[in-house]
Length: 159
Image (cartoon, rainbow, N blue to C red; front, side, top):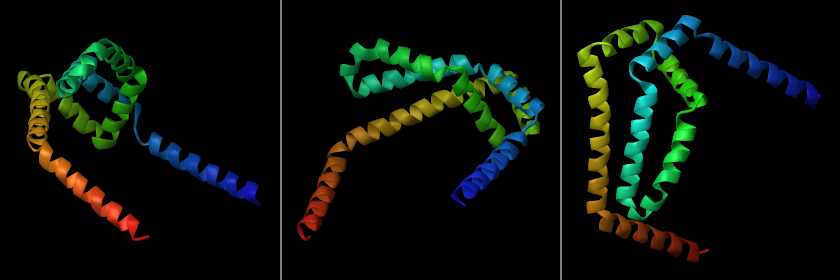
């Protein structure tokens, strides 16, 4: 009986997964790949890794001695074909084929290229603002965390 239930669950799962994966056509997938080529996905991923490392080192200067190791690791794992395929899946889930084609057309224009580049810079600058605000208010944050820890400690003492 248990074997039948397990088999039935596996069949249902595989049919569900197959139908979800099958909803995207080869042309839809090809359109996403073309879009990632247009926006220079690999080049931008490398720049993102570099920016992320710089931010980490700014937060913790002791990491400078490990920058080459970290860079090597992130480049190896975040620029792999597997990661690119996962990004393709995200785009497939988020945009119709028609929308992908329109995005690709837009990103091939001067304004589209500028928007794509600047949107990444704006995101980076936004993260830097967040980092600065948190650093400026770190004392308050630490105090709040200590107060909560004391509350939890007091609650544990009651048991």
